Length: 280
View 1 (tube, rainbow, N blue to C red):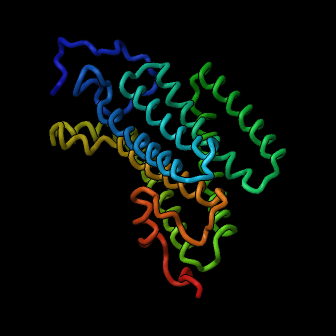
View 2: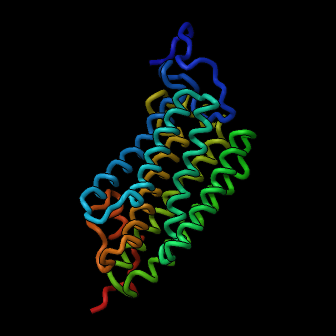
View 3: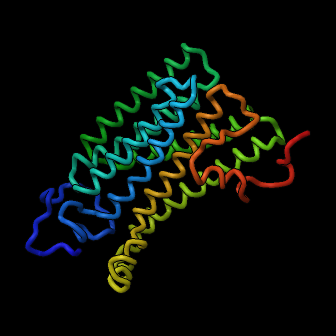
């Protein structure tokens, strides 16, 4: 249904400094941005699946679960923000992104490190994160927040590629399939990021098309919602691959318990051919 003019938004006036291209309170008075709120379920589903799979493994301690809890926190905090468009929920959304990438960054940076180095790196990353959070909440600036997030994601990607080459057998089927998952994860994450940018760049044009095609089909043109879907899939795949590579298990075979589309990516064109054939 379309929100009646006589109905007031359940959450009151919008106080967030960030607002996206989806029409506010178009569907219901209980959700400012309906599709942008709903699509956050992708983060939560993948996080729950990852946590469930870890419970089946005998050596899965709390630290291995942290990235999945972070992924779930992103979904919850982002949903709260898009539902209400309040300043404090905007801060939760922004901060959850940093709290998710930092533990993953720590894990890839300390894979072969001694306990002492692991603690030192953790203290440095933790102090940096705390300082950025305080600064971001006080100033509501986006530059350092964006630089830290993009820098963390880039460092995680580079470290993951290095680990594939050092922790899997050259030419093995496992390496080929893991490369397929990582390539696909990177592609879909970056696709989501560009959809996020386009959503802001051509917002007026998108709104015009949505009015033309009608409400249900217009949902497909909510590009920020597609960012949630794409980044949720990409983040899950990187978290799962990194966990597999650093967990100390046998890396000659990829785990068969990863959620879709990881199995498809492991066998698709993203996995490559030729030199990646399994050695005898």
